[in-house]
Amino acid sequence: MNRTGTVAIVVAGALALSACGKKAPAQLPPEPGPATSSNGSDNSSMGAMAGSQADFVAKMMGSDTIYFALDKSDVDPEDQQALSKQAQWLMQYPSKRATIEGHADERGTREYNLALGERRANSAKNYLISLGVNPARLSTVSFGKERPIALGSDEQSWAQNRRAVTVTID
Image 1 (tube, rainbow, N blue to C red):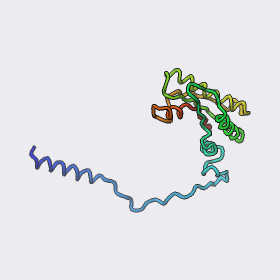
Image 2: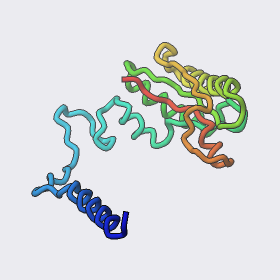
Image 3: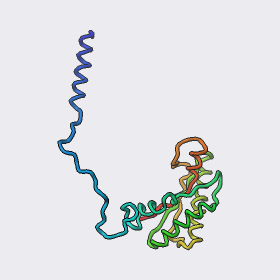
Image 4: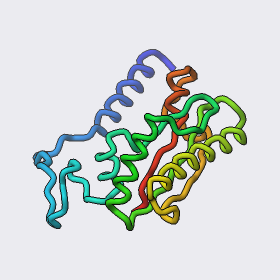
């Protein structure tokens, strides 16, 4: 193929692709307004329905997650404060159930990390029970190293992944 033919093909391809471009709509939708509630429930948690998972996360302000030292599953004083806050919320909504997810960092075997995640979830569960939460409302699951929140292979990332997260069930 000669140079003129090659140029013609490139130009034809560019024209064909430009014809496929999206066109802007004639009128854009209105900007979203503030969230409103028609049911009269407490909207203090940034529009979250009282007793929902979104309400739990908003009121916990990070206390839905506790962190552990390397190869540890014990609840330290900082974790106790977070779990106390969780227990208060759970006591306020006695029909709500929760699952505590245990996690580990990427080091260690899959089996070891699943067992460690289970110990971490059970430690958090047992502390909530000691604060008066009905054990029938709590379940645990271990994800081991399968669901990291931080993807790096450094101490900062590993520290974020050694955790137990409480998730309410609607």
